[in-house]
Amino acid sequence: MNTSGDRLRVLLRECRLSATDFAANRKVTPQHVNNWFKRGIPLARMEEVAELLSVNVRWLRTGEGAKHPGELDRSGLTGIAKPRMERGSAREELEMPFYTEVQTQNLPHAGRRTAVSELPNHKVRLARRVLEAMDVELHNAICVAMVGNSMADKIQDGSLVGVDRGRISVIDGEMYALEHDGMLRVKYLYRLPGGGLRLRSHNAGEYPDEIFSAEQVQEQHIHILGWIFWWSTLNNRRHPATSP
Image 1 (cartoon, rainbow, N blue to C red):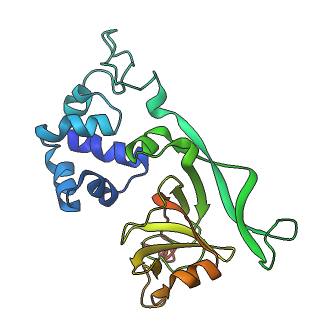
Image 2 (tube, one colour; image 1 turned 135 degrees about the vertical axis):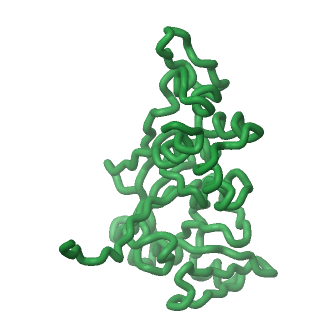
């Protein structure tokens, strides 16, 4: 890793953040981030990027000294401490509860076959810096699994999805997890006049938009679980291996 761009690429990989998501967080275009990978992070953005990813500015810029605040560098000096951060916490993994559809036989959801509930003894571990980068409080963070191909090729079937339950107010065009009459769904949401909702799939060719009035939202028990801040996606359209 000879440049700050190389170090940025590795940090995003460690945080499981795509260049596109990082660009959106910093309010720049993905092409800007790709340029940073190639040419290095602009000096004017160095401090904010270092703070966001919980690393020392000096290490990010030059590769020298302690990588994380509070660590000892080779000279025995500690890096500059970042406010609110405890030693070693930048790399700490935190546990999020896992939610899924469960049968309602023993649950108080009359008339529904399934409901979205926490799966006991199942946790998903995610780096603390991911939650901090996306400004998500741990007590609001849950994880669900994507089911189906309605969000392909954005989020593939079976991908883990991080949900911030502290953000349920709809911002048009953002992705949310929701419970629809006991069914777990992941969609782009748009507000409609009178309290209605438009649900949009990334795979819009196969899944047309769904429109619900305020009355239908209530009748069909459409409940927003939270804003989607992270997901892990594998390319499940893998081609068969071929001989060279």
